[in-house]
Image 1 (tube, rainbow, N blue to C red):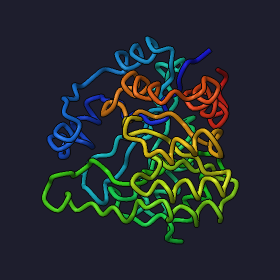
Image 2: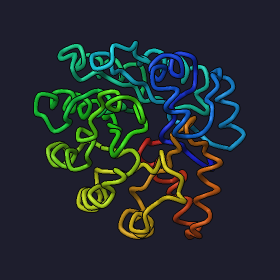
Image 3: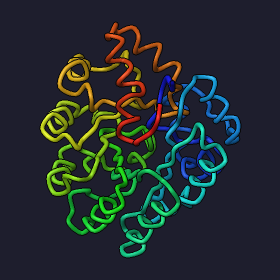
Image 4: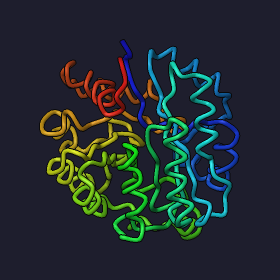
Amino acid sequence: MTRLIDLHVHPPVEAVIEGVFGPFLPSLEATFRRKFPVMSPEQIADYYRSLDGKAVLLGLDAQTATGLRPFSNTEVADIVAAHPDVFVGFGSVDPHKGAAAVMAVSEAATLGLKGLKLHPSLQRFSPNDVAFFPLYEEAANYGLILLFHTGVTALGAGMPGGAGIRHRHSHPLLLDELAASFPQLSIVMAHAGVPWHTDAIAIASHKPNVYLDLSGWSPRRFPPELIDAIKGPLRRQALFGSDFPFITPDRWIKAWDEWGVEPEITSDVLAGNAARLLDLDQ
């Protein structure tokens, strides 16, 4: 049985560390107080195998907003195909690319990816804008999960003007419109919307197609109301995620254990809920 399913992994391959995160790397290393060495897909796979876990690898396409080369759906799918025992893939689309973005949703599904990662503050779009609804409709048609960055971001932290990133695009309340308009669409709020976690909790408690991933923060820093929600109404909608390589899963789990959460709930959070969402055998 799989011990953990990490729903939020940025594979630290060269195309990610030196590519899409390259301009932000000094500030990221300052924020997290550690270096992020490039790893091969084989090394990442072996690391998650050593944890008896699986990793959901995330693509990222913010080309219009940043000018940076995407970490593409094809690149994600190729890594997953080489290590299908341990990896699941989520692609990404640049919502500003219009019809090409809608076609990229179809491409992601054809490649066998399970979902799409969107980062509204980095990609500079408001997810509740109806101009982007064709993307969500296409994702729903293919049964793809949409994982949205919510809350603040470490990208651009300490850089002039925060590298132009606007946090308002990643407020959890913007996703309430999507969840209501596309009830058949599974929506994941990454990072539980912190510091707007109470809004994220309210939306997920109201709409069963909304999930919270708990990545990007050490559980030592979780607000008590988030832990209360996980133990209570959101027990089946809370998903483990580390934000690897920025936070490692073993470090996250060590901090989680300090909360003394019941083993049954911990099992759901670490693997059970994600297995159901992703339709995986454990």
